Image 1 (cartoon, rainbow, N blue to C red):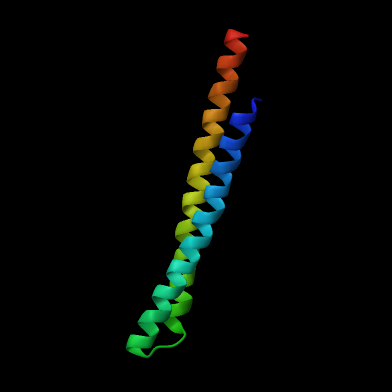
Image 2 (cartoon, one colour):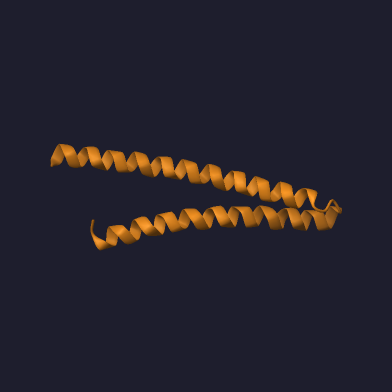
Length: 82
């Protein structure tokens, strides 16, 4: 595997981890802000964190499925051409 390809793959997986973390934090802080406005501490903070985690996890699974399908297609092309 060429060096550039390795870095591209690593960047893609780093992006996935950062997206999951940002989703959780965004949900948490949005819920925290709403709790401060409405006065329902910690209900919306927990709901926001959970919603962010769920959305981030769904995105993670969908992206990993796409990457796996792409990898399998590349393997099949390599076997046909090789």
